[in-house]
Image (cartoon, rainbow, N blue to C red):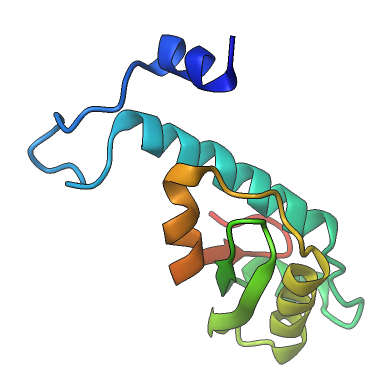
Length: 130
């Protein structure tokens, strides 16, 4: 039994049917794969992240940067830059460094390779993003 067979049993076949307001190119299977993959991707980058000790505890609570990331089909980070600054160039550089250091990241599933190749935005916070 292949991984694809297991996924089909759990989530069903991908179809073009769906909610009126849903993504015309999406389906439940792709949505679940995206959710799972992005959780894995963020965890992988966080493992390589070292927040500078020059950033105070007070600052850490409020900082939030949006990383723009492009990844090829094999998981190689093609581009990593800050799309929306945290207001701290030190933290922004920590995020970019972690993204580059984490390459290669886990390879994306075939259904979402195009999304990663065109680029995605991911929020990073030193403590937690709420």
